[in-house]
Image (cartoon, rainbow, N blue to C red; front, side, top):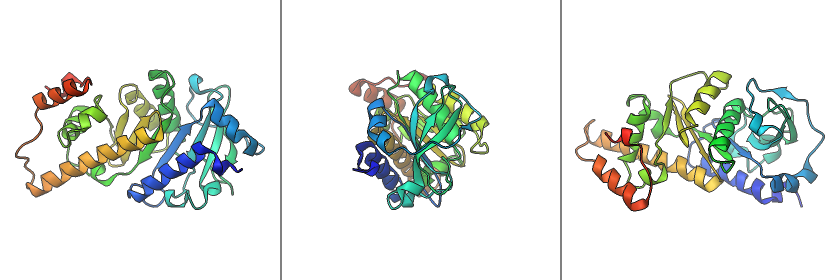
Length: 274
């Protein structure tokens, strides 16, 4: 048996391939991290190598001290993950202070975790705290239609949420809490990490203006499904605006959205409906 035969590693690689096939990961765009369960760590442990040096992240989170993460590599291409996983992805261990990582498997040839690992780490921290530890996936991609909306919609959670909810009937059911929006910032640093994690205390998904989307969830299917649903709604909105020459003749009303919420037993943000 190899580490690539471990179920969670196979599922992780499949999600990377699914994202590539959607066209969300041009060149080395996007990143994916997964916080391993204790039993998954033990399944992978026989394949760990001598650890590398500890590397400071510039951010810290006590509730993630001693955790292990699967991560894509900095500068690595999603299209190559299934072809060459040992060089494209890796497992890192977080120290007992919750402020540094070290590589214990993969990322061969001197590779490092994604440059946006600090953003992922802080988002893992707040989502784990908000969900009692059930959320384990943070996924960042560059879905084109959602990015296009950051050039034409007001950069507020309400405007983005309303546009997406009204573009496809299942949207208020899939993300009843809406989506947050971070203004444009330089990616990869502590500033955007903290801004994103602040919003992820409230939202499962956060838009990075002119850049992409961050999604969180308890597993790969849920998180990928959230990204997929948001991007499809954004595509519908873009198509409707294009076909209607910038005008939308009819849409799902606020009362329609309330009816959907009642039928499916979800709670929508009333401030986004008024």
